[in-house]
Length: 157
Image (cartoon, rainbow, N blue to C red; front, top):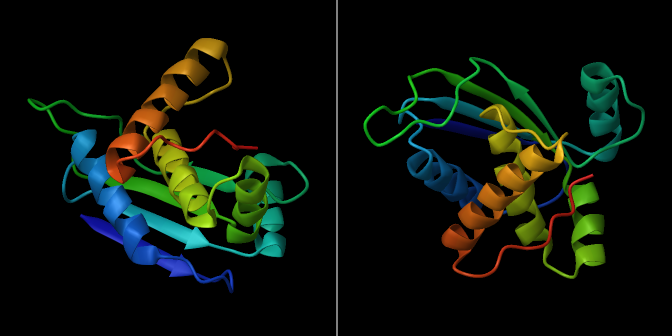
């Protein structure tokens, strides 16, 4: 499994824990062990630029996901095929603000955003109430299992 993290944000982030989380999610959702994932940590101006380019929306945001091979979760009998899961961009500065507002740590927020971004790469969405229930339920389940504690409240913008 290839998980690459590039921190251009200027904020110190526990990248090793993010990699462990990604590996955990890969295993739990039966993603091929050779699948590729890239995480880019950027500052607010860079995130604002990406948000405008990718979503045609002004302003910075917390997390953006760009799927590549349109992979979906596998099963024990049929794991996801090998391929490029995609790219996730996260803004640690926005994560810090959201973490303070939600009353949990910045690292917990980074784990939440990473999980959220990965689920988007796997085809999950939260535009409709049923989709949101499914996606956020799985997100809580994965985070709780990974951290061994209740997952933080959703702060996704």
